Length: 306
Image (cartoon, rainbow, N blue to C red; front, side, top):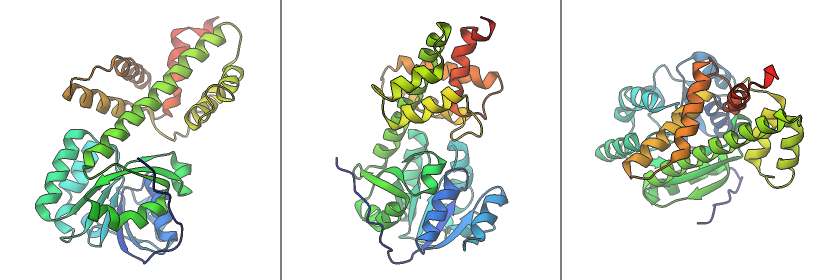
């Protein structure tokens, strides 16, 4: 599999709907506006929509009103939001036959299968295009995007994906492939954070700060973006504002466990990370960045009491 490297030249303008303007969606919609597309946006809370309206977006009153163009992008938080807005909010009924829905959300495999069938019944293209990257990466148009779906639908939205990402990774014609890759990828991020959380608690107990330990590790053996980004947050204890909330990490690890159970794939470490995220949420840290797993590890070691 080779990534498609985007050409950042301006393409023919398209009429686009963008649904879901959270930390990721707002930056993505702004990129499409900057590329010259006619973008209609909808968000549950109005503030994010107003900011994009100032940049030239049209603000829809309902999700269905944002779904009447050639392509609809959605970036919603979880299965419940996708069902409420896309399935039950009139979006699919409002989309013209032959239009394409690009779903960027991290959702369960079960819901993805429902969506594939619902789109096919209505003659609407369904493209799974989950993204890797934090909000600042989305705002810069430098996401990594995994994409799968009907080849004709993917080809139609390829210029839009090129606008949003630094690389687009094609995974074939089955949308499930992109969805499961995203779930598995987020699980790997969670395990990287957990390993740094536990290891830095260990070094701290011997008088080596998390900053010193993680500087060595991320400058040598683990010199990769995930370790550098989250290692920096752990070293500085900079957990707010969250780039990716603990509650969303809990949801995504849960998706990995459900997908694994469906295929009888044991994932013992997923259960460990799942319970650690749950412990953090029980302590009231659900809105912190999921790098705050380091708090759980430090708390178990009672480092403040030493």
